[in-house]
Structures are given as structure tokens and as C-alpha cells.
Amino acid sequence: MDDADFDAQLRAAIDGKTKPLGALGRIEALAAQIARLQGTLVPRMDTCTLVIFAADHGVAAEGLSAFPQAVTVEMVRNFLAGGAAANVFAATLGAGVQVVDAGVAGAMPDHPDLIRRPVGRGTANLRHGPAMTPDQAARALATGAEIARAAPGDALALGEMGIANTSSAALLLHRLTGVALERLVGRGTGLDDAGLAHKNAVLAAASARVPERLSPDAALAEFGGFEIAMMAGAMQAAAEAHRMVLVDGLIATSAAAVALGRAPHIRPALVFSHRSGDAGHAAALEALEAQPLLDLGMRLGEGTGALLAWPLLRAAAAMLCDMASFDAAGVSRPA
Ligand SMILES: Cc1cc2ncn([C@H]3O[C@H](COP(=O)(O)O)[C@@H](O)[C@H]3O)c2cc1C
Ligand SMILES: O=C(O)c1cccnc1
Image (tube, rainbow, N blue to C red; front, side):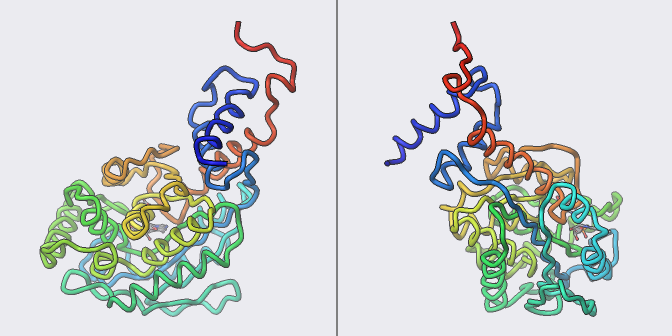
């Protein structure tokens, strides 16, 4: 069946369900996206895994976060103990959770569930030089892809933890979308006005350090974090395996921008779950022509927004699979 035939059948299947035309709004578009990705009118959407990639950032030394760098490893412990927002949402919504050490600076807990794949012990300070070597960036991308392929689930949600990673995200999104840097720099974990002004100054100087145009891979090495690189690799691998990818907030969107820059063909697998409350996310989504499903004023990361969109994917697929048609249910069509 060619694409046009499939699309015609899909449209007929959705429009034939017992509802006024278009009455399920964006759930109909979501159902169509899932069906196209899986190449079937009866798509499966039963299981979801959240993979949380954690890493530290040398640029944290510039004082760009309201919290100290130690919070990264402390939150890894919290994820492993099941106490973080991401754990609670995942448990509530029936998603699995995996935690990856992508390159945390502190001593990591000895825990059987921790996936240990550090590329380094935190990136170099991007204010003064590249955050990572091209080899580290390539290794992080490949590791993320490998972890995604091994993680179960019809959908993969990607989350992150890394103090100062909104700084990496803003720089990456600036370089990859062309949106002005100051529109992408937000308060992150809660900087005050003076902190925000300082973050803007440091990031403008870091950006000026690399004046030329950058390929997605080069931008990733200059400004990325190991967790962002692994998320990008994971997004690409999952999408290429025709699995739905749930993109979270600002930081995950910077990973999506890297992944889309490297592999534009993965776009049909991506769902932009929510619009983060961090200042830059709305502009970044607009530049990527992405319409987020939810807008809850959340600005946490960890994959929390991605998880909240998971039930919408399930509902969309179930609509296609289980909802009765006018003919099957004996319901009259419009007069
Ligand atoms: C307790 C705590 C839990 C978090 N969970 C995610 N983040 C979020 O905040 C960080 C980014 O913000 P910034 O660039 O300002 O450091 C990331 O780790 C992100 O995942 C957290 C931050 C804190 C403090
Ligand atoms: O949008 C996000 O993902 C975000 C924003 C602020 C802090 N941490 C995460």
C-alpha cells in the first residue's frame, strides 16, 4: 500500500468512529502520527520507558544555577530510591524508569539498577573551550543510541538531570535554531534577576568564543552535555526503530534539535510533550515548528512533562484500535 492509500484508509478509519468529524481534536492527529509511524491502522501503545540521563557540567563553576553541582548526584540517588517527581509520575502512569550515569562528577552510588556509561566526569567549562572532544560527543551519541535500543517500550520518554544544563540547552538551541540567545536563557532552577543577568553575560561570551557556523555534531561538542548528547542519540535510534519518542522540556528539546539536525527524517516519531515554563522553551518550540501537547507551567525536567503526555498517546492509539465505528455500533451518521 502506498502512503496516499494508507493515509486515505487512516482518515476513513478515524472519521468512521462514533463521533462528530474532528471531535477528538489533536488526539486524532496524534493517533494518525502513531499509525503512520507503525504502518498499521491498529497501532500498539502499551508500554513506555523513561530513561533519565544524568551528567555534570564544567560551566556550573561560573555560578549559572541556583543550586550547587552536588545536586546532580544527590538526585541520582533520589531517582534510584524512587523519590523524585519523575519516579512518582512514572509509577502513577505505568511507565518504567531507567537511570544512566552519562558523566556525573561526584562519586556515584553503588546501586544495581544504575546504568553506568560515563563518558567523563563532567564536561569541561564551555565558557573557555569546547565542553567535550569530538570523540566524547560521538561516544555519548552512540551510547545513548545503544541504551535506547535496549530499553523496552512502544514509546520512549527521555529525561535528564544535570545542574547547569539549561545553559547548554540555551546555547545549543541558539546555534541550531537561530533564535536570539537572550530569548533562550531562562532562570533554570530559579535564578534571581542578578543571577539571570550573569547567566546571560557568561553565555553570550561563550557563544562569541565560537563565531563560525557549526554542524549539529560540532555544536554538541562545543556546548553540549553528556546527558544531552545521549538523549539525542537515544531519540535518533528509537525513532529509526519506529518507536514514538516523548520529548520533555527545554533541555530535551535541545537534544531533539541536535537529533533533528543530524537526522531530519526522524521528525514523524517525535512528540513534543509540553511547553516548559522556562523562558526559552516557547521560542525554541516555535522555531522547530513544534506544537506541544500540554502547557502546565512545569519547569522541572527529569522527563516529567514527557511522562504526563504518555497517557495521551495510549488514548490516541486505543481510539483507533478499540473505538466503535458508526457501522459497527449502529449509530446514525449526520443528516
Ligand atoms: C532538586 C532539583 C531537582 C531537579 N530535577 C530536575 N532539575 C532540573 O534543573 C537542572 C537545570 O537547571 P539549572 O540549569 O538552573 O541548573 C537540571 O538538572 C534539570 O533537570 C532539578 C533541579 C533541582 C535543584
Ligand atoms: O524545561 C525544562 O526541562 C527545565 C527547565 C528548568 C529547569 N530544568 C528543566
